[in-house]
Length: 156
Image 1 (cartoon, helix red, strand yellow):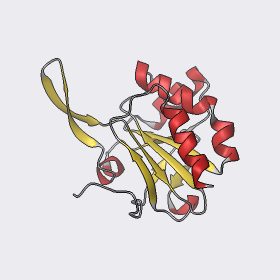
Image 2 (cartoon, one colour):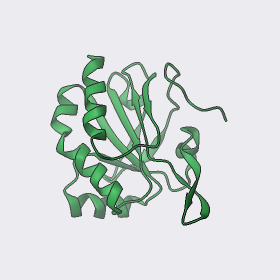
Image 3 (cartoon, one colour):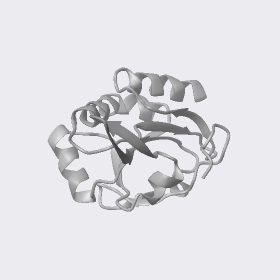
Image 4 (cartoon, one colour):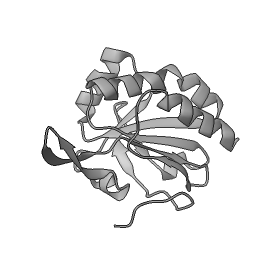
């Protein structure tokens, strides 16, 4: 599959969330969507990233944006992660990895000389019309939420 690029229509998705419902791109039409992919609940980088986005949630909402974190973790794991860290973002579960594949973030990774498949930490900024406006790949967590917020505010 070819890699997604800015200006393209974002792939549709429909996933269960930690809030007990489902979230889909079509239901978010008209809103700015910050879709961030992360490897695993309750690991250091993923926890920091979720807390950073949560701490700025009122700024994202004021700019008309919805923040959704996606991993392969189960809805139950998401609920525990959210409760433990008082997270304010929506966490969506993609246990089969179908959406993760569509967004091109299921990649080969390497650690301690071993290669394996995993989720690339990446963020997609989707405009109200459903097109991808900005993509961050291989995200470094420090200051990432601020950078994404500035890009959201620039869409206004």
